[in-house]
Image (cartoon, one colour):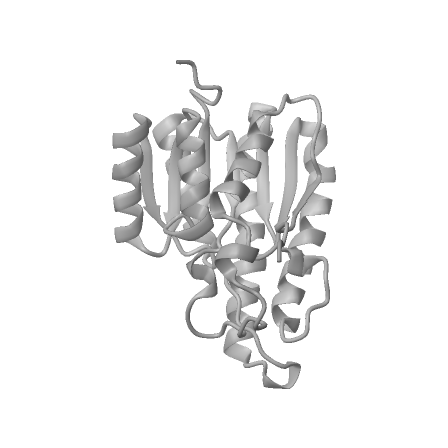
Length: 246
């Protein structure tokens, strides 16, 4: 059976778990070779082995800290060295720490700006360098509905995601003359490990993540859908919100 992305190469950051792993899996299911990046080397290795076994596609695990520009450059170079091209760059790595404005800790702010903003910028720049000579490519920056709303308790996270949206819009304008598509995906809450553990604000009593959040595979399918479009148009932004049923 023909798979529409066979022969294409996709790099996914934050691929060790959650949405990133779902995105990598969705690309592999469509036949794309995948390059997996995150700081969790063992999770990447397990995912790469699983994707190769299940979908029969090459999967390259490259442990990467997106806060370090040199590591991001090396990630993209590893993709080119192995496959000779780069078709899709998904800048997905991100983190959030919530709390009142007056409680923002400098270390938390730095972590969010370095990961969410700088990581997205370094990934986009590295991909752009490869895609320009190709005359084609797709860069998808995963933002959040927090990049479009003002949400109490999320001021620093809001700031980082608004920055991602602003950067992505300008990147799109600069990339278009070179045949490169750039999209920003802004999902609402996703039922992944992102919402488990320290720093997460408690849910209102009537909200259940498993019921009222998006599923990772739904968001992943939307991202892969952008790569399935023709090269004659661009989708600048996708906003995804859960359909909450009471």
